[in-house]
Length: 217
Image 1 (tube, helix red, strand yellow):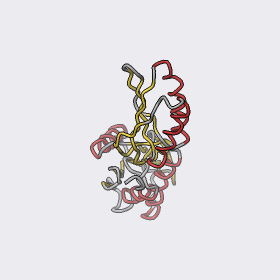
Image 2 (image 1 turned 135 degrees about the horizontal axis):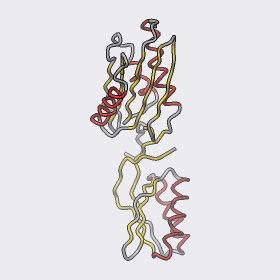
Image 3 (image 1 turned 45 degrees about the vertical axis):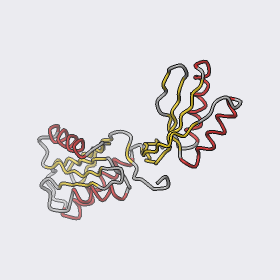
Image 4 (image 1 turned 135 degrees about the vertical axis):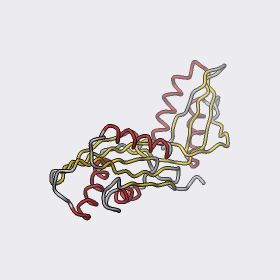
C-alpha cells in the first residue's frame, strides 16, 4: 500500500540531561531494530548507571509501531514509563527506545512532578534528534556503461534528494547497475529523466518489488 503512512524513527542516539529540584534526569534515546535490541540498550544504561535509584524506560518497535513496553523501575506506578511512552507515541515514532536515569536530589517531586520530569526529559532529547521517515518505495534498476557510471551516480543522487527517494546498492559487472528506491508516483519521472540524460539509451526498470525504506529528512 504505497500511500500508507508509517511512523518515523531517529537516525542516531541522543543524550540529554534535565535537572529539577536537585534531581538529575539523564535521558538516552536510541534507534533499535527489535525489542531485543531495545532491551540491550536498557541493560547497558543500567550497567553504566548502576548507582542510580531509577532507570526508567519506554520502547516502541515494529514497522507500524505495534509493539510497545515501558517500565517505571521503582518509581510510583504510571509516573515514569507510561509518560515516556506517550511522548514516543505523540511524536509518531517507532524502532526507538528511551531510558531516563534518575539520580535523586533529596526533594520529592510528587506524582505530577515525576510525570512532567520524565516526559520532558524524553521530549527534549527527541528535540535534538535527527528524524528518519519511513516510506513504501518501489525498486528501480538501470544499467549503464562503466564510462557513464560517475555521471549517473551524480544524476541519481540529485534526483533522489528531490523526490524523497533513496539510492541503493550499485553492482559492477559488465555494466554498472544502479538501484533506486522511489515513491510509486515518481517512477515515471525517473524514467523520463534517465531517458533524457542518456538520449534514450538507458532505461529505468521497475522490478515490481516494494518495501518500507528509511528516508532521511
